[in-house]
Length: 200
Ligand code: GAR
Image (cartoon, rainbow, N blue to C red):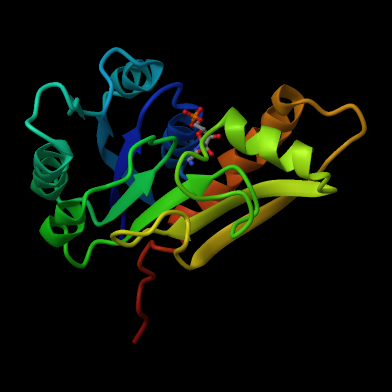
């Protein structure tokens, strides 16, 4: 059964693209039912439009607070019948009301490091890779994990992929190699939520 998925984005949307491509090629039995962004005018929204996928924008400026914005976001996601929420480069922490309104719908997040290392509040994008390099670690990678209310980067791991750190790596070169792995990891992770046909 094709899994209806909501993808939450904040910027570039290359992971959204990987998901859209996997759905289009038949490599993933899912369909992106809605793309939701917390920023207007970001490239991820153009990717959704090009793929013919509906999108919606919920900026903090339009709502009285984060809870109001995330509650409206959850209502839009429930409205399209999404059965999985995927945070693919989403840069806000979801308010608890989001989970209440989408009770029973799993939420997963993609993070560009090997959690539980280099996660937590404020750890997004290049900051993560800079921290990894500063630590002297010999490998990094990416993690897709479950998201629960009031926690950041602490949910159960769904998929993890490892990337060696090479001599002379900068945050930029490391980010690029990790991103390549992210594109496969996010698709693999979604696949785990696709219901399998029960044979009698
Ligand atoms: C990805 O590298 C993702 O892991 C990261 O944002 C990037 C989004 O790229 N997410 C985080 O850092 C979450 N803490 P994309 O917009 O091209 O998919």
